Image (cartoon, rainbow, N blue to C red; front, side, top):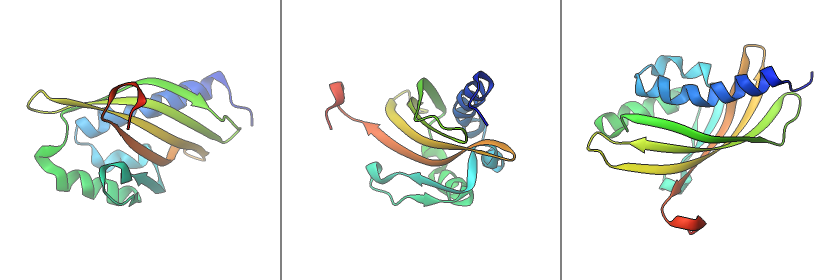
Length: 134
Protein backbone atom coordinates (compact mmCIF):
# COMPACT_ATOMS: atom_id res chain seq x y z
CA UNK A 1 0.00 0.00 0.00
CA UNK A 2 1.10 3.54 -0.64
CA UNK A 3 0.89 6.32 1.96
CA UNK A 4 -1.69 8.67 0.47
CA UNK A 5 -3.02 12.14 1.17
CA UNK A 6 -5.98 10.41 2.83
CA UNK A 7 -3.55 8.51 5.08
CA UNK A 8 -1.83 11.79 6.01
CA UNK A 9 -5.19 13.31 6.93
CA UNK A 10 -6.20 10.23 8.94
CA UNK A 11 -2.93 10.20 10.90
CA UNK A 12 -3.16 13.93 11.63
CA UNK A 13 -6.75 13.54 12.81
CA UNK A 14 -5.76 10.55 14.96
CA UNK A 15 -3.15 12.65 16.76
CA UNK A 16 -5.66 15.48 17.26
CA UNK A 17 -8.33 13.11 18.59
CA UNK A 18 -6.24 12.39 21.71
CA UNK A 19 -7.12 15.70 23.37
CA UNK A 20 -10.81 15.39 22.63
CA UNK A 21 -11.14 11.90 24.09
CA UNK A 22 -9.04 12.57 27.18
CA UNK A 23 -10.53 15.97 27.95
CA UNK A 24 -14.04 14.55 27.55
CA UNK A 25 -13.18 11.67 29.89
CA UNK A 26 -13.87 9.10 27.18
CA UNK A 27 -11.08 6.84 28.37
CA UNK A 28 -13.00 3.76 27.25
CA UNK A 29 -12.29 4.92 23.67
CA UNK A 30 -8.48 4.97 23.97
CA UNK A 31 -8.40 1.87 21.75
CA UNK A 32 -9.36 4.21 18.89
CA UNK A 33 -6.02 5.98 19.40
CA UNK A 34 -3.57 3.31 20.51
CA UNK A 35 -2.66 -0.25 19.66
CA UNK A 36 -3.51 -2.74 22.41
CA UNK A 37 0.22 -3.16 23.15
CA UNK A 38 1.11 0.56 23.02
CA UNK A 39 4.12 1.82 24.95
CA UNK A 40 3.44 5.27 26.44
CA UNK A 41 6.84 6.53 27.57
CA UNK A 42 6.70 9.02 30.44
CA UNK A 43 10.32 8.55 31.52
CA UNK A 44 11.03 12.27 31.05
CA UNK A 45 8.59 12.84 33.94
CA UNK A 46 10.30 10.26 36.15
CA UNK A 47 7.66 7.59 35.54
CA UNK A 48 8.09 4.17 34.05
CA UNK A 49 6.63 3.65 30.57
CA UNK A 50 3.03 2.51 30.52
CA UNK A 51 2.28 -0.67 28.59
CA UNK A 52 -1.14 -1.11 27.03
CA UNK A 53 -4.33 0.89 26.78
CA UNK A 54 -5.57 -0.21 30.22
CA UNK A 55 -2.40 1.16 31.85
CA UNK A 56 -2.91 4.54 30.18
CA UNK A 57 -6.53 4.65 31.31
CA UNK A 58 -5.61 3.61 34.87
CA UNK A 59 -2.89 6.27 35.07
CA UNK A 60 -5.31 8.98 33.92
CA UNK A 61 -7.88 7.87 36.48
CA UNK A 62 -5.24 7.79 39.22
CA UNK A 63 -4.29 11.40 38.43
CA UNK A 64 -7.92 12.41 38.87
CA UNK A 65 -8.27 16.17 39.38
CA UNK A 66 -4.56 16.69 38.59
CA UNK A 67 -5.23 15.95 34.90
CA UNK A 68 -5.13 18.96 32.59
CA UNK A 69 -8.55 20.24 31.59
CA UNK A 70 -7.31 20.86 28.05
CA UNK A 71 -4.87 18.92 25.86
CA UNK A 72 -4.07 20.87 22.68
CA UNK A 73 -2.01 19.43 19.83
CA UNK A 74 -0.15 21.61 17.34
CA UNK A 75 2.72 21.53 14.86
CA UNK A 76 2.21 17.95 13.61
CA UNK A 77 5.08 16.82 11.40
CA UNK A 78 5.11 13.38 9.75
CA UNK A 79 8.44 11.79 8.84
CA UNK A 80 9.88 8.37 8.19
CA UNK A 81 6.83 7.53 6.17
CA UNK A 82 6.48 3.95 4.99
CA UNK A 83 3.40 2.20 3.71
CA UNK A 84 2.20 1.00 7.12
CA UNK A 85 4.32 3.01 9.59
CA UNK A 86 4.81 6.72 10.22
CA UNK A 87 6.85 8.68 12.71
CA UNK A 88 5.15 11.83 13.95
CA UNK A 89 6.33 14.71 16.07
CA UNK A 90 3.88 17.20 17.53
CA UNK A 91 3.62 19.79 20.25
CA UNK A 92 1.22 19.51 23.15
CA UNK A 93 -0.04 22.26 25.40
CA UNK A 94 -1.76 21.22 28.62
CA UNK A 95 -4.02 23.70 30.40
CA UNK A 96 -4.65 23.02 34.08
CA UNK A 97 -7.79 23.87 36.04
CA UNK A 98 -5.94 26.68 37.85
CA UNK A 99 -4.95 28.31 34.55
CA UNK A 100 -1.32 27.21 34.56
CA UNK A 101 -0.06 25.42 31.49
CA UNK A 102 2.80 23.27 30.26
CA UNK A 103 4.28 22.25 26.97
CA UNK A 104 5.43 18.85 25.73
CA UNK A 105 6.68 17.26 22.56
CA UNK A 106 5.07 14.00 21.47
CA UNK A 107 7.21 11.58 19.46
CA UNK A 108 4.92 8.91 18.04
CA UNK A 109 5.22 5.77 16.00
CA UNK A 110 1.94 5.18 14.21
CA UNK A 111 1.05 1.97 12.43
CA UNK A 112 -1.68 0.96 10.03
CA UNK A 113 -3.85 -1.88 11.33
CA UNK A 114 -6.95 -3.51 9.90
CA UNK A 115 -9.04 -1.09 11.97
CA UNK A 116 -7.07 1.98 10.85
CA UNK A 117 -4.08 3.96 12.01
CA UNK A 118 -3.09 3.62 15.69
CA UNK A 119 -0.26 4.96 17.86
CA UNK A 120 1.98 2.05 18.89
CA UNK A 121 4.59 4.09 20.76
CA UNK A 122 4.42 7.57 22.26
CA UNK A 123 7.25 9.33 24.06
CA UNK A 124 6.22 12.45 25.96
CA UNK A 125 9.03 14.97 26.42
CA UNK A 126 8.52 17.89 28.79
CA UNK A 127 9.52 21.33 27.57
CA UNK A 128 11.11 23.01 30.59
CA UNK A 129 13.48 25.55 29.07
CA UNK A 130 13.49 27.70 25.92
CA UNK A 131 15.49 27.10 22.76
CA UNK A 132 15.79 23.36 23.22
CA UNK A 133 17.67 23.50 26.51
CA UNK A 134 17.13 20.47 28.72
